[in-house]
Amino acid sequence: MSNDIPTLAQWAGGPEAFERLTAAFYAKVPEHPVLAPVFAGMNPNHARHVAAFLTEVFGGPKAYTESGGSHAHMVAHHFNRHLTETQRRAWVALMLDTADEVGLPDDPEFRAAFVGYLEWGTRLAKINSQDGAAPADPSAPMPAWNWGPPGGPWQG
Ligand code: HEM
Image 1 (spheres, protein in one colour):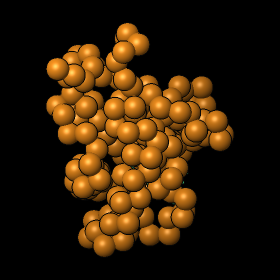
Image 2 (spheres, helix red, strand yellow):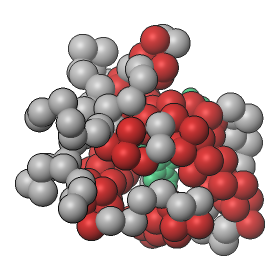
Image 3 (cartoon, protein in one colour):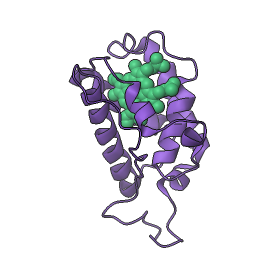
Image 4 (spheres, helix red, strand yellow):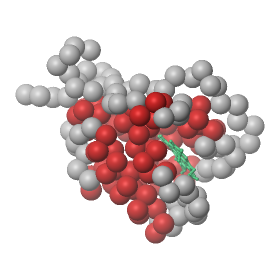
């Protein structure tokens, strides 16, 4: 990808944009009929950790791995939670509504890539939350999402 094409994280507005996104998302979770029980008792730093994870997936600074996290680490947080499809869909829907609320870019190219990762990541989280899920692979790389077939944002 040539140098004048921003990363998805740059296009989104950098780490602060993902922090706004997850802060607003998890602020709504306690009132959400499906998601509130899933996140009852969550770590108070959860929103910041998920923001750091998403920033890194979308090509931004590697704060999640530099502070000792890994894809395996994230996967392991979902073990034995027995997430349902209803819960997964609620998570994606709330994330997309929140992306609109906090003003993440809404151009087709960005949103296609954003939704692509959310679909992949949440389906993995659900699979890994079931009984009998394979152990997390410590050598698994962090996902590195990019623009996919559109190749970059439409810049006129
Ligand atoms: C792309 C999708 C997802 C990503 C990137 C993601 C990321 C993460 C990360 C990074 C953590 C660890 C947070 C920490 O260290 O404090 C975590 C924990 C957790 N995730 Fe996810 N997750 C995803 C999908 C989901 C879904 C769909 C659900 C449920 C509907 C879910 C439920 C949870 C719960 C309950 C925890 C533990 C929270 C706590 O006790 O602090 N996740 N997730």
